[in-house]
Image (cartoon, rainbow, N blue to C red; front, top):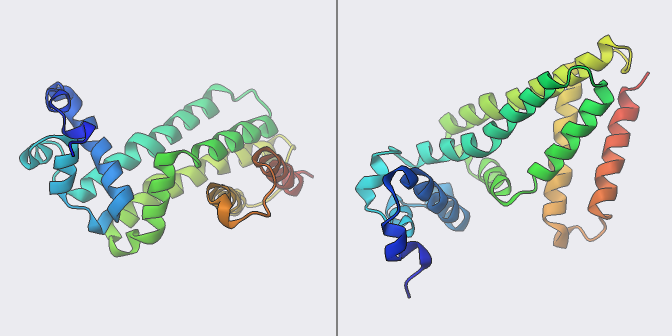
Length: 210
């Protein structure tokens, strides 16, 4: 049976579209077979290109994973940092609420869920990728939340705390609960998503306020 990705229309896509075409195929293959189990041959087949074409843009699977992270999470972090800079006049509580809602929604998108699964299940076997993810995603995300908390402390909205530790606690809460809600079938005791989010925001703000 011929899939849509193997159709002549796919093969005729313009050269400038091929990196995204290959990346889309890699998302599907990683979702089905994991990072270790995916072969470049299968990515090429799904993308409707020759294997040699992949090497024009990505030297290996690790490079594809890095680009997956850059085009999703790192791009979102860049936008969040720009938003933080553009709204310096907002209260720290407003900034935290805005960031929390975006984090909640973003972590529950399909591609971010896949990346998180690969990070959790497989990056222990890819130390270079783990170092890349730790530095470019985890550390950067915590710096942004630390900056929001520091703003609140400076303005007297939040009590004096170590912003780095508070940011780490924020990350743990949001990622854990978004993961549970993404797998709701295994966590039937969870409330409505909107209720969970609002309770988490109020809980975290209560812990920070004087």
